[in-house]
Image (cartoon, rainbow, N blue to C red; front, side, top):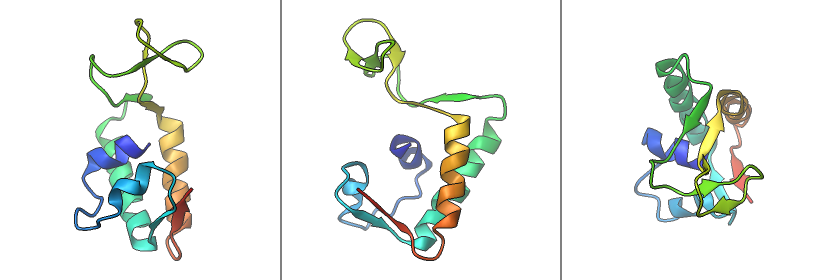
Length: 104
């Protein structure tokens, strides 16, 4: 999900702690940013109406086996997320519009 959010370009570039968004270090996503993220993800879904699974890496990216473990053998792209999970995260972000959320 983090990779998909990063690809939307909505994360603040002037925030020195933005790199912590993927490290479970307590990064605080304020309410306004949560709504901005939800809006950006909704646009991404609207641009891809027939896509059920978003693959977020190229052919050289990491792969996982059938159990979800990283592998150096051919396998599934490690960075993929289903449309249903994206929709669920959009609803979560909208529910945090006042206080935001922290990533732990």
